Amino acid sequence: MAPLSSAGYAVAFAARAIREIFLPPYEIKETARQLYEVGWRSLPLIAVAGFAVGIVLSMHTRASLERFGAEALIPAALMLALVRETGPLVVGLLVAGRVGAGFGAELGAMKVTEQIDALEAVAVDSFKFLVVTRTLACMLAMPILTTVMNFTGIIGGWLAESAISGMSFEAYFRSAFSVVGFADYVPGTIKTMVFGYIIAITACYFGVHTRGGTQGVGYSATRSVVTASILLITANVVLVRLIFFLFPETTG
Image 1 (cartoon, helix red, strand yellow):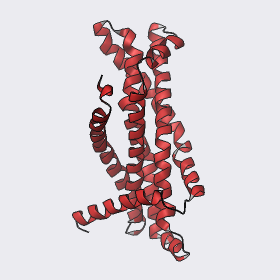
Image 2 (cartoon, one colour):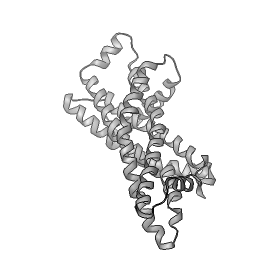
Image 3 (cartoon, one colour):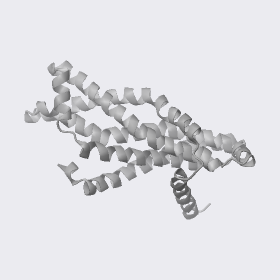
Image 4 (tube, helix red, strand yellow):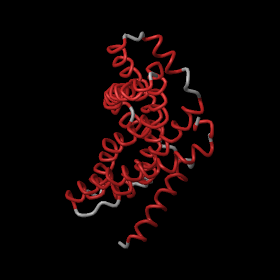
């Protein structure tokens, strides 16, 4: 298939998913199952990663701010970095690796074993049941996972700072949350829903277009992760610029 034709099919696939989200029937049970798979089963990974990122960011932030005698700004700087950029992007890349590969492989296996055709044969809308439910679940789970990442990150930052300077839990959190408002949290949260949409659509597209048997399943899983990660990084650049335009106060 020519590159331009493939791009056209992918865009049409993505647009159809958005339209189908708002049209009945609503596969609530399957969406809830996918939300459990995407959200709840990703929580341990996200929590551990957030904790580690918080510790590393705290150490790097301290090393930079110590030069200017601004150690008191470490909690605020860490919180802003997590909420605005680090948290959403790290969660997006982690979910792209875990969930994107899973979706691509699962749907790819269903395609090569003709299970998708079997669903259509019994009058089930396979696109609605397989693609839309996963897309919606991913979009709903991403803000929750990002919030967990931010929280565990700030906990990790506090532990690192407490070990060095002995700062109390209350003082750290008061300083951290004193500079974060809705203008910082809301744009980043909305951005993660876009990330979830990109991850699910990319993985589902490669999954339902799998060819070549079991080898093709592995190829689809790999392409899902790589393509979703590239699209996330590219989309992040555009979204950051858009956020600065729509929420100019975030540049302060």
